[in-house]
Length: 250
Image (tube, rainbow, N blue to C red):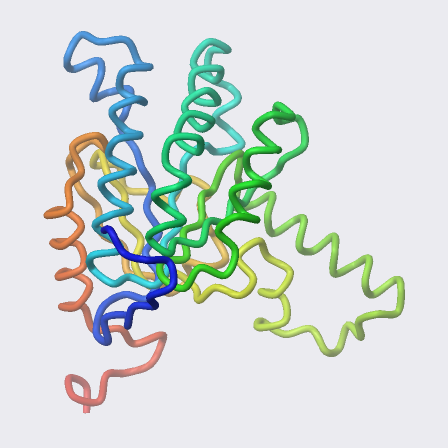
């Protein structure tokens, strides 16, 4: 994807409007090749680059990538340090291309306790790319879906106590405005690599009606063709949202 940030693209009419991806399997990819886990994470970063370009080429308006969960802190300190370093490398190396291609970057998750340099890079990335018209790219970093819902509930409670919100006015759309993804459509397609079949605390509220596609490949092997296959699978699905499909059920 090599386009001016000033040229807005028309999204595909029948494709997903928001793809969420659980990028799983970097460590197992490395283990299968007799490599240290950090090499799997490095290969995973290249897969991110390829995927973001493919998302742009497929004219997907929004995407969220699950890069580091709040539970990943339980991993060995050396691996956590490697992951933090890779995030910094990715931002520094790819920000210019992302901005040139009209990608708006948002990074969600808890920033408390992060290295100040990482926080500075996150803020600079969001400021630089804010308002870009093409792909809205969200990176879930130090993120947990349950924590996000608890934090939204806490903010709602504070607004009620302060008299800014009538509890009777609370609704599903209003609750969603307190989430980290405020302003984005809910994901309509979730892709998970590595063959695992679970959400792993990822966008629990937002994925209530998402279509799920599980890919057996490890994340470093995920390609533009795999993304295309997942989108094709999405287009074959019948989405009912709890109701009936008139053509099939009438």
